[in-house]
Amino acid sequence: MILILFFLPVVLLVVTLFFGRRLGSIGVIISSCFVSLLQVLCAVIVYIDSFVEHSKVMYNFKTITLLNGYDFSFGLLADRLSCGMLLIVTVISLAVQVYSIAYLRDDPHRTRFSLYLQLFTFFMLFLVLSPNYFQLFLGWEGVGLTSYLLVNFWYTRTQANKSGLKALFVNRIGDFFYMFALFFCLMFFNSTDFEVVRTMLILVPTHQIELVCLLFILAAAAKSAQLGLHTWLPDAMEGPTPVSALIHAATMVTAGVFLMIRISPLLFEAPLSSYFLLNLGALTALFAALTGSCQYDLKKVVAYSTCSQLGYMMAAAGANAFDTCFYHLVNHAFFKALLFLTAGIIIHSMLNDQDMRRYGGFIRLLPYSYIMMLTGSLGLAGMPFLSGYYSKENILESLLGQSNYFSYILLVLTAGVTAYYSVRTIYLVFARTPRYSLSQTGHIEDAEYLFLFPTLALFFLTVFHGFITKDLYIGLAVSTSTNVFYSPLLAAEFYNSIFFKLIPLFVSLLGALFGFFSFKVPAVLVSPLVIRFFNKRWWFDYLDSYFSRLLIEDFYYVYKFIERGLNEIVGSLGASRTFTFIIKSVVGKLQNGSVNNILLIVALTLCIGLLASVNKPLILSYDY
Image 1 (cartoon, helix red, strand yellow):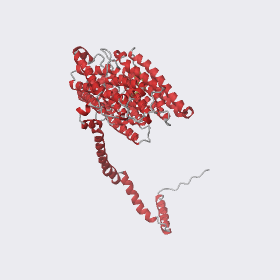
Image 2 (cartoon, rainbow, N blue to C red):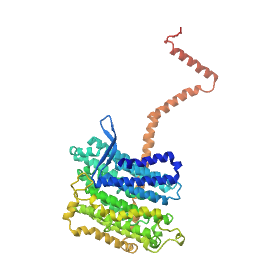
Image 3 (cartoon, one colour):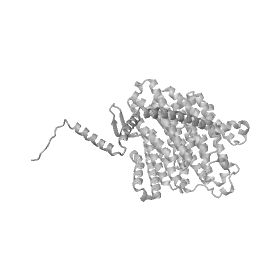
Image 4 (cartoon, one colour):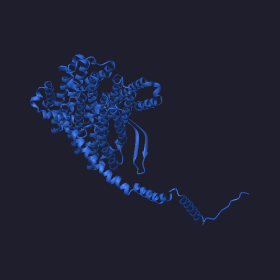
C-alpha cells in the first residue's frame, strides 16, 4: 500500500506529460481527483495498520556509498508519525482538488494548477516517508519549490510574483541552516539515518547535540513561520484560496513541526535547545494572535491564526510533549482547512474582495458558509467538545505539569486573543449591518455542490476527530516520540488541580465575550496607536525591507569591487582579456589590408614551418 500511495502521483504526472492533450483539461482534472481518492483509501488502510495494529514498514530502494564511507539510502519509512501525516496530506489534497474544480472553473490554466497540486503532494509524501534526514531534505526542497509555483500561480499579478519570491527567499534561510545541520550530523554521527543517529546519541557530547538541534530548530522556524521568519506566510495569501488551504494549513507549514518530532531523540538530550524552542513557540503564538486580531483581510486573519497555532505546536515540542504536539497538528489541519475553504466561498461570492470592512449581514445570504465558519472558528478558539479543544488543553496542561509558567501564561493569553478575533471575524462577516453595495447582492451566492463535499468532510472531522482519536495519539504508552514510556501529561494529570485546568477555558470565554464588542470597547480601552501597531504587523515588514535593502547594497559593492573587480584584473577573466589585448595589438597592426603585410605573413609562416621540420627525417613509404 505504501508503494502504491507513493508512486500514484508519479504515474499521473507521467501520463499527463505524454497524453495530456488527448485527455484534455477535464480529463486531467478527473484523473487527479481519482488519484487523490485512491491515495486517501490507501492512507486510511496504512493509518489503521499503524495506529491500531502497531505495524511499521520500511523499504530500502538504493544505498549510495561515498569515498569517505558515508552511506546515503533512499527508501520509505512508514511508522506512526509518517502514517498520521499521510492521512492529513491525502485528505486535504483530495478536498482541495474537488474544491478547485468549482473555484477555478473559469481559469484557463486550471490543468496546470491541478498538476502543481499533484507535484506538491508527491514531494510532501517524499518528505514524510523519508527514512533519513538527507532524503527528508530533498522533499523539503521540493515542497518549497512547488509552493512557490502555487503561490505564484497567477504570475501576471505583480503582488503574486513578489509574494512567491519572498516565500522562496525566506525559506532559503531555513534551507541554509538545514544544510549545516546535515553537515554536522555527518561529522558527529557519521550518518543521517534516523535510527543510526538515535543509537549514536550516547557516544556524542551534549554540546554537539545542542548545535545540531539548534540548526534544525532554525530551519524549522523558517518553514513553519516562527517569529522573525514569519513574514512570508501572510503575503503568501496572494495565491488561490485552495493553495492556502493545502500549503498554509495542513502540509508545508507543518513540515517544520514534523521535523521537530523527527528529531525528538536529539531534543530529549538537548535541554537548552528545547527551552529555546519552547519560548520561541510561545512568543510566536502570542505575537501572531495579537497581529491577527487587528487585521481586516479575511485570509490574512486565518493566516496569522495558522502562525499562532504553529507556535502552540513548537512550544509543545520544546516541552518534549511530542505526542500532544502531533495530536494538535492533526486536529489543526482539519479545522484550519475548513476555515480557508469557507473563506474562499465568501471571497468567491464577493468577487475576490477580501476586506471584511465591506462585508456584513451574510448570515441570511450565506447560511451554509456561516455554519462552516462558525464551527471552524470555535474549533480554532478551543471551545469544548471540538477537536481543537482536546489538543490545545493537553498542550497547556503539559506545560503546567513541567512548571513552564512563562510559556504557559503566554499561551493562555494567546487562547483568549484567539477566541477574541474568532468571534470578531464572525461578527464582521455575518452579524453586523451590511456594508456592501446593492449591486453586489446579485453575485452573492452560497456554496455550490462541489464546495459542499470537501467542506462537509472537514466539518465532521473538525467536530468528531479530536474525541474519537484521542486515545490513539496521547496516553501513557502511546507516543510519536521515540521515548514511548514518557509523557508530560502524567504530571499534569495527577498534580494539577482542576482550577488550573479550567483557567484556559475561562480566558477563552472571556476573549469571546470581548469579541462581541470589538468596535466599541477597543476604542475606549486601547489606544489607536496600539491598534495601528498590531495592524501594521509590528512593523516587521518594514524592518525586513530595510535590512534587505542594506544587505543588497552591501553585497552589490562586494560584488562590484571584490568579486567582479578582482576577476577582471587578477583572475582568469583578467588574464584572458590581457592576452586578447596583446594579440590584438600585435596582429591588428599586420592585418590592415596591405598586400605587403599579407606577403610578409605568408613568408614568416613558411619559414616557421620549415624550421620546425628541419630535425624531422623525411620518411617515404612504398606499397609493394
